[in-house]
Length: 324
Image (cartoon, rainbow, N blue to C red; front, side, top):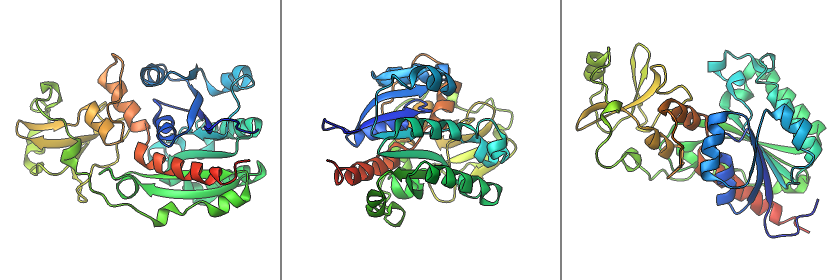
């Protein structure tokens, strides 16, 4: 497939609310289609993009719509990571969510793009004593793509103060392209953005404050600094020692676990959804009229846009050198 215009075309699987899509658009690519099944994620996605969104299970997308979906230069996939995380009890491919990786490979084999980017949790590489990762590498090799694996932390590679390590699998059909792809792991960028730069200016809705929380006295005793983000971990408070935001999770703010907390002049509160979005680089992201619980989940499941933008730019610069 030859791209006859100036854009590299991108197709996105497990698109969520579109963090990876936005990153590739930032890098100069054109997203031509995306696939996502979650109703509320699709609502948010449509608030931020106008290209084709296939709202359906990936199996239905493959069976019904993949053939007519526009050909692409780059495939992206944020296939479900729970099966590969500590939070997902390390079930790996025995969990049906782990099998979504094979759906990604099926699309890769049918569309045959020039390159791909897959994103997942850091645990992916060590899960099941490395067996899960070896299966993934073998599948990619069998598909005749050349793989580069990156482990990047948002606070080191995105100029966003969040301690978020993720695995990024970058692949090229052309071995020469893979050989010249830059080693981003060895080239961190300075962290100049501060926590306070990403917090809301002005009044915050009282509903985010914790004065009526059962464990408020415990929070008050342990949360003392206004320059630190803490977490409520069901029964105790964790202070972030690196002076950055701890990893944002899909369940933050929904069940009392992993909730990011700060102390301001009015008291102790959790980060608002908009503030959490800022810590993912989802600046000015548009959300429909949905519950905060959905917003927190969507943000925690999303990606750090500045990190993915950096990878996307490097991929496009690499592909440019092999354009015919």
